Image (tube, rainbow, N blue to C red):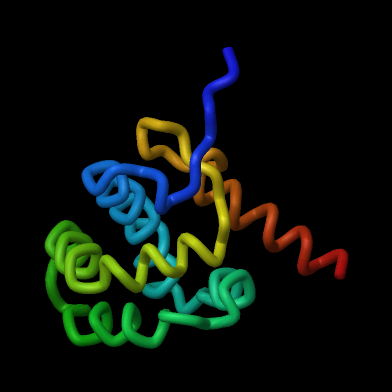
Length: 113
């Protein structure tokens, strides 16, 4: 069954929040491993400085709290990043390509460029 894909700005606010939380979880992991090149390349670095500042200021809190704080305080910046990445979303708010798989695809593209 083919589900219709939509863009991040076509999701309602509740589903946008879910999409942002899912991406923020992935992004925070990359941040903690100092491995943001893939996202920076995909977005030309736009909006990442603000997101990184919030994560850095709150780096000593537990991951669950950091995820909540980052996805709330940087919500608009995350949405802008997701627009730049231009991934499709199911009407459930789930990304078409899981973020770990998306990262591997981006790494492959860079390796063959």
